[in-house]
Length: 151
Image 1 (cartoon, rainbow, N blue to C red):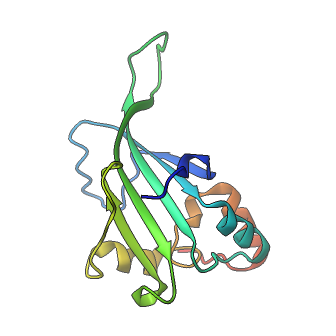
Image 2: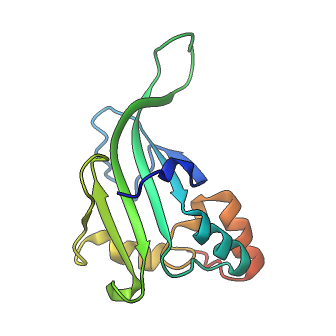
């Protein structure tokens, strides 16, 4: 688990996003928050590509609708439901990228290369197997740099 990722660059947040038509939400809404390390962000801004050693962290949090003075809408819960990490390291990983999962307190474990996420990111990733299409600021940079690949 990368320490201090919440101090990194915040790329975007999504609510109830799923890449499957048959999403199993079990009546719960979830937020995801995506962060990237500062050095990688500087490299991306300069080139429109993620440099080697990039780390993107997506934390998943539950959604609340009742609390304090809130009358409408949803906000993120204090409870972190999980963490996914997308790491670019040409020397270490097949295809240059790997995915890791953690509950947020335990060490992250690499997702096996046979998992569906690798093929999905390769097929649908707008830049370098990443879903830049969902990160408005990064998407603008990628389009301007000519690195954006529309799905």
